[in-house]
Length: 121
Image 1 (cartoon, rainbow, N blue to C red):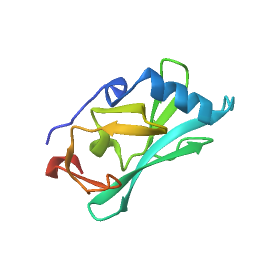
Image 2: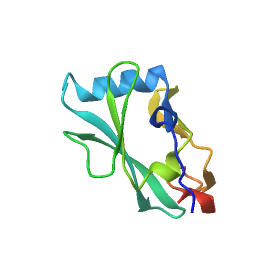
Image 3: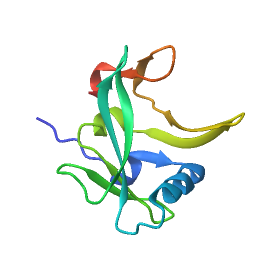
């Protein structure tokens, strides 16, 4: 049996634009955090869920971003999002979070759900 180790700061990378977006979403709530999780959804398997959390749930990995925002990664998402870049982009008038996830094996046509490679979940 082997034990896999990783540095929490390498779990996900968050662009400066996404960090600023998260900070704005928190609206000055210094005790709150952004929580990233996944849930079964859509035609392909999973979707990303971003929530504001007052405290971590059991098993969450807690990260502190460069701008001081706390990011919690849910236990059920760690394997699926490891190595992901979270960016905040603008296309025309639309702004959205974009997840550039190296573990994704398939995405639905509308981009709402994804599935991961066998080792990712």
